[in-house]
Image (tube, rainbow, N blue to C red; front, top):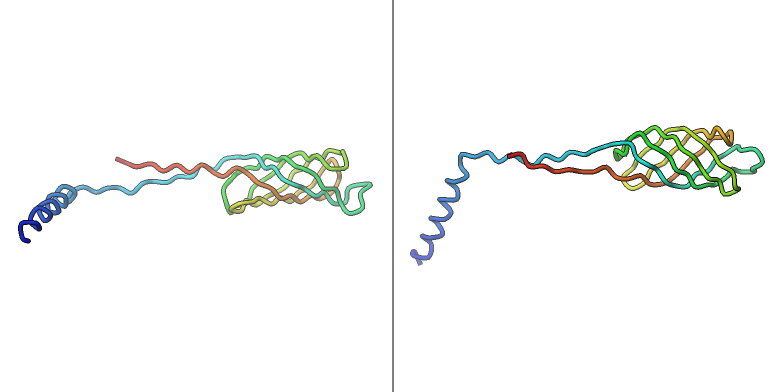
Length: 128
């Protein structure tokens, strides 16, 4: 039995000695937050000739795609009544969705939106 334990003990002792003097740094993870596109549905309120608002499909540029963070927003909307809108506002990027609120200058009314943005790129590097 002792002859079976000696090779294992020798391997463990030499492996421990080989790494004893080295500090192995942990990997470094960085997140690249950048401006991103937002695609979603919008509802414009108070527009002329609409009795409760106008729904539409909206495309916006957001100042950041950082998760759980506010962002500035500007974009265009194709409303389902055939008209177009142009808006600026603010948004909030959640984990899996983004909400926006702003003012549509073409439709002359406030607008809210719900949609998606691209997620930030996560890069993990090992320092040697």
